[in-house]
Image (cartoon, rainbow, N blue to C red; front, top):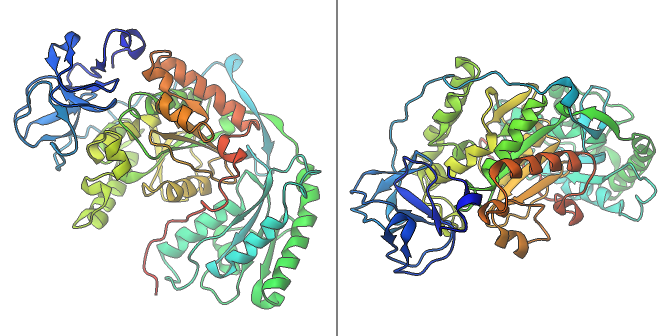
Length: 515
């Protein structure tokens, strides 16, 4: 990739790789504009981030971005022609896999250079970046009760509990009318268990209705957790109904608050940090600024012994071979391919989903032609270090370094799985402007362009558009993101936390049938 910082003053477009047959526009331009550096004239108006044919491209020939195929020409395309999702065709093609070929052992920083953050250390050795009390429903039937209990504890009521970040309710739309055994229930158990015992949670109250399929007892048994003074339960049918359960729940939380407030932040190694990597509302600048910069930050984090979780399996489709090449061993590479193939087999055939090619309207408006181009940028969030493990949805992440978790591409569902797996920080890149929070884990928003950052400053934490503006390079941006990891992990509030987002974004992946 050419240095945008160096070339911004001299060009309206950029070549990302010497093997590319396209350019990417850095500015809005009119039809007929001549680009002297590339000796071509644009045939139509173009928006920043969109693609221009660098040379003539014959029909059915591959189109390359970052040296990677992102689609095929639907007809003969002439030099200077603007490319969109209407003339870039998505179709399957063979990708060569060379398992583990690019794996390199991580070069860890010297002990004298190790960084730390201020976190809440738990008895099991894990470390929280926040200190919440969770109120969790086993079934949708107890959703109102858990929200009423949590809403009682307003900022005013929590004012004296300076070490407590809040009381958060986690309700969902399932828990009954589903398969009683098998992966659908196992997945729900893992997700609920991951939040109940999350490192960002000091204490939990679990509320059930009583007759649901996802029983409190079955949940606790499957997750190996026991009731205690920090983990209480209430069953509505045994407790006298809605009002009585709300009152009892409030009393439980009041008793938990004093103990939770005694926990203070302590200095802890950066190896305790687990960052979930998300992108949503992507645009063509995602692969030029925020995603590769986040990848640089991930490489630094991994070098300090930390962990980063890449997810959204449909959004690595087309570049999965770049990840299998980084796998620590063949077993990990095969696990990743099994996940990708499951999505292709189950969700792509005859269904209008993005793994079948078409990305969302927002992605299209942002200049992305198809899922291949989106995946190219999405995978960049994972940096360059070895792929150490592949996890099922909401499975506890216990391997350090760069890992992958199988999740859908839908952001709330994907982030819920990562958090259930132990992510105590989320880094979320966006080019269109996703407004997202994820209690009990802070979500850092990284804007891909300065226009978005300025227009939605209330929601955006970091402006990666400085790369597009030529004011910072990718390395500098990555270092800034890494430093912000430490600041936010140590207690600095993200924009989504200031807005109190994350109250309704808990969304376990629903698989199987509802009967």
